Length: 103
Length: 165
Image 1 (cartoon, chains in turn green, cyan):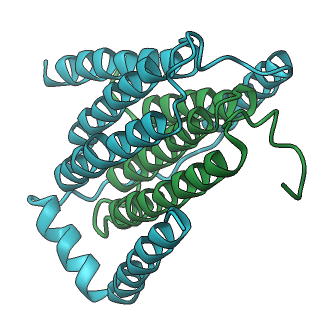
Image 2: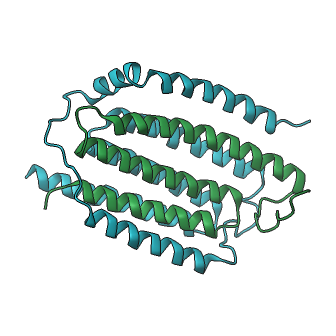
């Protein structure tokens, strides 16, 4: 058995599903952000695996990976700023308690 | 022999990454979750090294394990999420979420093993970092510049949203 594309894609799929479970099943808003970062990482692994096995001349998957990391970092910063502002307003980050559209 | 070592390294590093990812979403204390998340980021960086993407691996450690996890720890500390003894509990719909994630995993496995992936036979560049840099500054220079504007906007936006007023 040689290390091939399918190995990395199965790992990426499992990581993505673990992140999906975390994003759907957690109460703490920061825990949901952590699960979303796991999903972004899973997609990045898939992109880089495709760059290695299907497109080694142009390395487009690695370019995508750099952009995914950039955008995900910016998104985490903004999402955590929103969580902080929400905590100041409602004194909780339990997403089950933040269920009214206006305060 | 080289194939065996690559496979062994993949299973070791991949197993560590998946185990720490599962622990991120299951442990009841959120600070422990953040630390397991850092471990899974480092595991993913090791996977990038296995895929001959050394620059992406370095960026992964720098930005994800270095900055994103620290940012999350700051957010945990500032929102006092760690004061309660069980700060990372599942909500009312966790069984449904497990079902959905499991169903998606089965569908993805079926697609992975059911598709004839176009594996290329052309060789990898000798220095992938150099090739990545060339691509980033010639073919992809416009998204590169837009990404820097996006980072500026995100920074200004985060400061304004999180500001005390």
